[in-house]
Amino acid sequence: MARGLRFHADALADLARQVAWLERNAEPSWLDRLQNDLARVMELLRAYPSAGAVVAREDEVVLRSVLLPSTPYVAWYVYDARRAERDLWIVRLLHASQRRPVPDVSRWVPTVRSRH
Image (tube, rainbow, N blue to C red):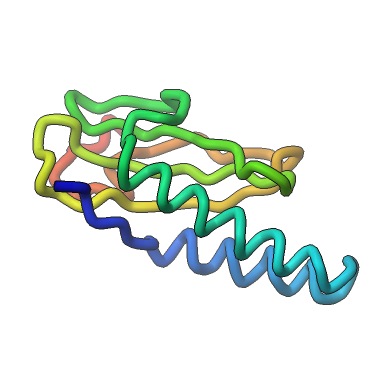
């Protein structure tokens, strides 16, 4: 059985910012490409949760990143590797050249205690 996939509020805010920027500065086809890329990445991650590169790890909770196939965006996602029944969460959507924040897995998975 494939994991469920959800969007964290941080990722939804990122998506809103990216869409707003594209609406102001890019051809309308870019919005379609972003939508198609997100659908493809969601399908990939449901089937293969470990497809992306590891960004951070707290015990068995893993934060990974995956490049969107035809647009310059990176999705960060987090999941508990030992609990296959738990949902996978897309937690950030960043432009590939955007400065990335220091990852804090505990922000997206409350069961992990922050080291900060």
